[in-house]
Length: 203
Image 1 (cartoon, helix red, strand yellow):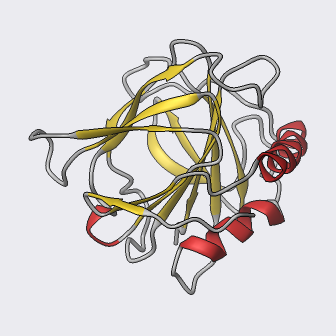
Image 2 (cartoon, rainbow, N blue to C red):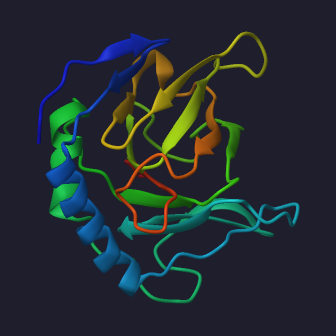
């Protein structure tokens, strides 16, 4: 794992090229093992809209959205327990999180062609003193960074495969999202697409 300096954008610490190609490939292999246990599924918002990303998770908890609302659950919607967070993922947290607690959830989002994630806050966690750490794999994604309150000016940056973002401190409750991906911009995933991991302390 290549240690990289970060750039600060609105309090978001962005580590470009944090993972080299070998580390990315090893991480994808570990995630494939997780998804054999807890397959990707297409979540539905409380309003009944299907999200454009597909999701799964590793760790004690997974983040769930359905007609009952947004929440963390200890089981996949199909009923199985989530697999453990891979050691390769834990090593990233330990390198950049600056937090004494270990993550309890590694949310796995898969973006296919045309998928996006609207501006949102990560605020379903009990302890917002701990950061959220995001890992990008595969196709490039246009990451938008906003403000604690909705509205106002935003700033965007392209995240490449191997980039890591730590959202702590002033950035912890700022709105953020992914406007689009450059489908086919990476050769990491044979069928294309982008994997985004977000590590969270839940309780």
